[in-house]
Length: 216
Image (tube, rainbow, N blue to C red):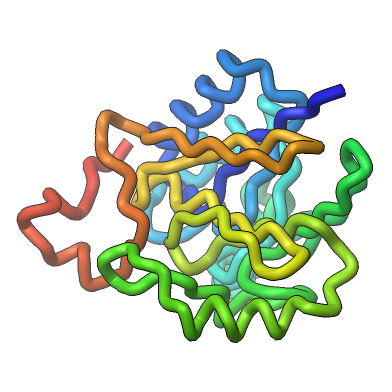
């Protein structure tokens, strides 16, 4: 049997890109959808993003921007936005088609900061970073590690672990589908833009990339 899982991350309160990713997942008939955190941050349409995640039955974890939202909106603890983010776990674990899956926003076991950076600013693999994380994950008790946070796009074998970051739907313009048990990963571009393998905050000021992206 084959199971297909849609992967999205760092949606940052931008519903248009997320909605397109969810439409791709529906078209491809995925069996499950996972979001690797950072529902909030950067943009202002948090409620529509939450509505999309709930409607699509997406399994979601907490990111650093979600934690920051909770800390700054304690007075609104009865709001739907606050309650949704407050209920999010720091990590998720699955057993799918005999493969053990672990999901965390930045890096294991439950970090919201730091993250796993494998690429340089041009999207090229950094061998020293790959070697470092291969060493860090050599005793991992899972087959697939799904992360977000760094706004980088990769599916990279690190020893016995397949390490996947689907990228930010709004900044990298990307999402992914993981097929199990083959552990094949396919990336999809969003909003008519090329996938940016590596995105950082300074790119907001690069006129050649037409940043910031249009608000949904």
